[in-house]
Image (cartoon, rainbow, N blue to C red):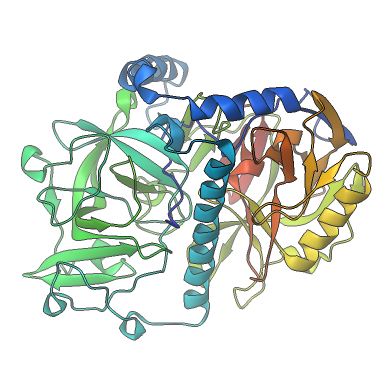
Length: 494
């Protein structure tokens, strides 16, 4: 499905094998960096044999890590959870790494399509009454407002373990910066997909509370409905998958970091499509119903580790960014408050600026253009003109590498099967304040099979919206300073 794998509040996985960035000053011009071909291929092969059942219980690991975090961050407003990759939840059914990659890329394409569709609806002022309803177990007469399929509210490739209700019961939840609505599957089910945990039963929780149709939370939904004065919600995804049910408030717990009462979330009784593993989703977008907004967080940060590494990291709220961060402006689109836009002005390859008009990265007054940071998109998308210039600059400096045919959305690939490591030109993001963020080689040259084919991990888009994906973010702590409208990038902070 178009729905990108789930994100947990403690991160563990990034989309493809990982590389270590040398301890170089970020202000220093870095022209080349090393790609460890052997290590990347070893991880690619290992992920196929990974079995979650062989791990120590994640609950025990999480508890130990959160106890350490609680001691390290005594600030009462600070809370943190572990983030895990999709592959840590269930054993992949794919028999070879290339089919796994193609599956990831198919989900990713659907994810991008759903984000751009969501933006276009906002830009063109499409009203809820203009949308066609989705056929579900809920009868049309129960819905006060039509609902739509195919407009994604977001998804992700990473999961967290969150407690829901009183007494608290733990569930794996997707973590997603591209959506605002929090939801999880609930009993009774008219149609529920298979998840790792038992399905949440509202009757077991003393803090469960149904929201009325007149509530401010209900009126904040993009798509809402009313039945017997009970607020109903629906969230749809780019491939037609959806969740629908009661809109309620509940208590969410974050390990030993504490709990927060009356968080509005969807209690889904009809959840259909290609969801897998996680019980639901945590929305980390900029809208009023997102978790950061409801908790009045001044900041939050995450670090996405390599998805094939089997490691984890954390999602943190109200913590200061590392001192060595590269910081730029966090921008808002007046037409859509969910997405996090950043002040990117250009890119460089091998220490040389790529000839790309700065206007291709700028958000205009009408809400078009700009570039967002998204946890659920895997591969960075650039407007076609910008992508072509970046690719051509990279190809020009990699003529010593044996090229091979493209794969899926990648048009620039190399046969590195005979090499153990290789030096490649460094690709860097350039920000509006003149600062630069060089990427490690594994964040833009990724294996697409287990035999040594590596591809340049950027892709063109015909949309005016550009997206920094999680492959380019892996290994970097990304901090969203909501109070001061800044975003910070800190390499090697997982």
